[in-house]
Image 1 (tube, rainbow, N blue to C red):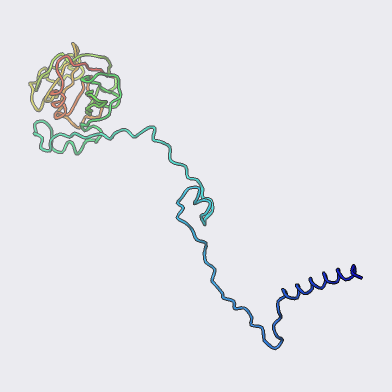
Image 2: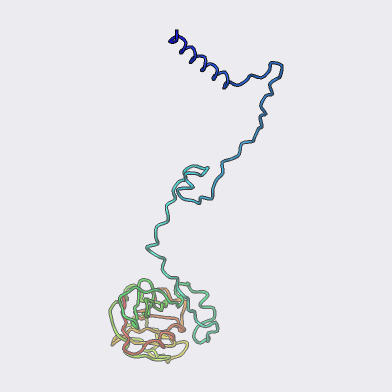
Amino acid sequence: MQRLLVPALVILSVGTAAAQTAPKSAPMSAPMTPPMVVMVPAQPPMRAALGGGFIEFLFGERGPQPRVASPPPNLYPAPPQPTYINAPTQIDPMLEPPSTAQQMDPRYLRQEVAYAGKEEPGTIVIDTPNHFLYLVEHDGKAMRYGIGVARPGFTWAGTHAISAKKEWPDWVPPKEMIERQPGLPHFMTGGPNNPLGARAMYLGSTLYRIHGSNEPWTIGHNVSSGCIRMRNVDVIDLYDRVKVGTKVVVL
């Protein structure tokens, strides 16, 4: 009898405890209040000030952006622009007719340019095909002048030195020139009408000269019998920069 009584007491204890912990149901007469629902508008996700780069790529709104390649380095910079050094505005009429500079091709105006040749500073380089005379300076620069050169059949090349310098030189045409042009005078004193112009620099023992001209419109053309023509204002400028013995390279 005692063995049957013990399990019954255990079952009764468990049932009593479960009854005590179970929630009490509300009276049937009290209505149930529905829960309050509050509608909250959706907010965009907060973005921190993350900056650009990879973080911006991860959190940005536009998605991955195409990568823009940076421009390549300028390996060949543009050469420096010429610095024009024109003659004075007021030019003596005996040197040059008025407005000559305005009528000339700007390439043939006196100007300082870059020079990458091999000649030493102080050398005169005559670029016959392009109608330029260069006086080589220091620091990779040169003074460039427009010139008139020999017409076809009279061009030449070589290296000489200035053997003499003269202001307003007299002109004695060589006999070969007189034979070709019998009407030429055999002698002409120096002056504004002289074809040698205001200055002349003689090249070695040859008959060739770098000289001025009373026909500045011929600069930039092949017109002479072998001499190098310059504007009077330019030949005076060159004359004052060089001395007897200056090396002259004719190309």
